Length: 184
Image (cartoon, rainbow, N blue to C red; front, top):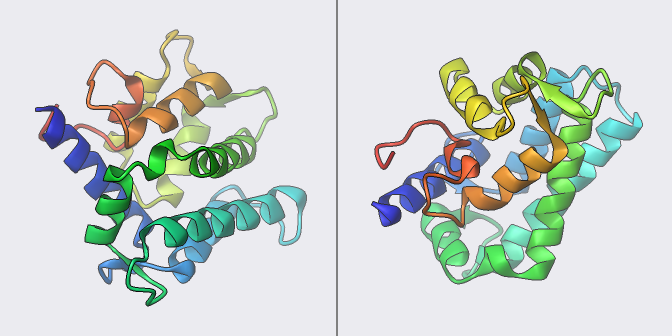
């Protein structure tokens, strides 16, 4: 079961990142994902949040490319992505720092009212920008809201994101960020 959960989440994460569905992730996919987030949050071009999202996604791509593009072709296949994650990329302090920066940046952009929490509406907008279904967003939100106060704090969001690709424990809220999988 734990192996199935990790496989399902790795496949789901890859699918979210592969914006054009060509079976590879590239710099263009990360630019497109950042653009989708900026559009969903109605961020003005060159605004601080817009610039921060663009930079964070570009840095994330570089980190993934460095750790996963074994054949040097400028794109990462699902097999390369899975191999990199399995080889410990997600425990590398540099990778963790990059992912944390992306998560903080996404959180700040999603928190449109500036109350240091992501409401259901803000979360649904974020998931819509990631081309994820509303039912997936609802499952993720309900699990990430660990204190059941109706919103996701920065700490809840970061803990979830950090567990997404590394935990095989269904009691970890982050394992549900991509919705209910066959492993659940």
